[in-house]
View 1 (cartoon, rainbow, N blue to C red):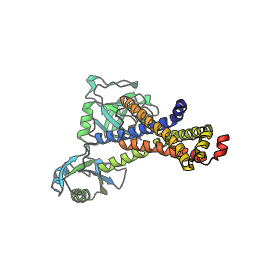
View 2 (view 1 turned 90 degrees about the vertical axis):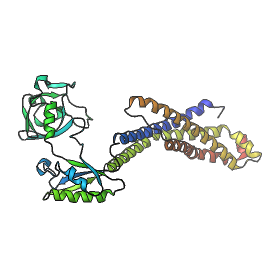
View 3 (view 1 turned 90 degrees about the horizontal axis):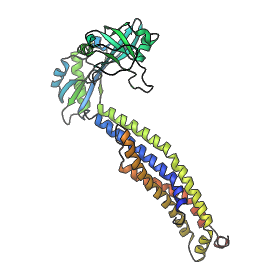
Length: 381
């Protein structure tokens, strides 16, 4: 190893790249899980969400009214319930709301946000004027305009109905990116949005439980009270555990991280082939040494261990350097990401173990060949 430093280092490159890639990907996955848990910190262990699932999935909840303004107060008397609140869903997150938009026979779900002097990119038409805050005007997102009209530019000046209110289209936003999660958000004045939210139906309830209470048992009691308060509804009240959703997302992230790490680990296989190749070269170059050692009493097991330990040292050192480079890389990409990667002890131990295993797997065959050499032939070849 000392006499062929450059050759050994070049052999380790595949191991270094593979280990650093796996470490980086696992750290990013762990960081995403931590960020998700922090962002859902308000989803406490004693909170459940109760919603209503109508038999007709297309039914309008505003007509069915499965919840009323008095429910949060009446449900406080249920055993095990600490407090009840209207859910902060689409209606209460960052000024965002939504509804069904119609233009003659065409329909589309419209996500709505208040304009509030935002800097927006208008593709067609114009934005709002300050004097128009009290008017029912709307700037459509490109996707919605495309759905409701033959072409987005034809939307300008037309009237569309959103939640029973007619809005005049003054503009159309530029097209959203291909990977937009919301599919675009249309804009109305803050005054119009506030008017809309005062008339919205309660879509679900957040029920906070007392410490130590069983979620399923409390939900059954809450469900009975809601059925009594809202009889003859065609549908069923459902329990949604926020923690279960969090765990499901964590599991999905874990699977995706493992899958991508596995793909990145292909370079480890390539690195292992490189180690096997260089060990074969080493065995060929050192035939005379092997023959002399065997001639003075070294057993085949000693020769096997010698070359196997050398292979493990190469891959082990490559693994340690890979962990170091992975740590540095995580620090660098953390600067450009919305959350810092988290390097866990388990990933470090796992990477070290993988390095040693690669050394054993890809070093064992050259080591066995070396141990089986005939001493006389080895000395004279």
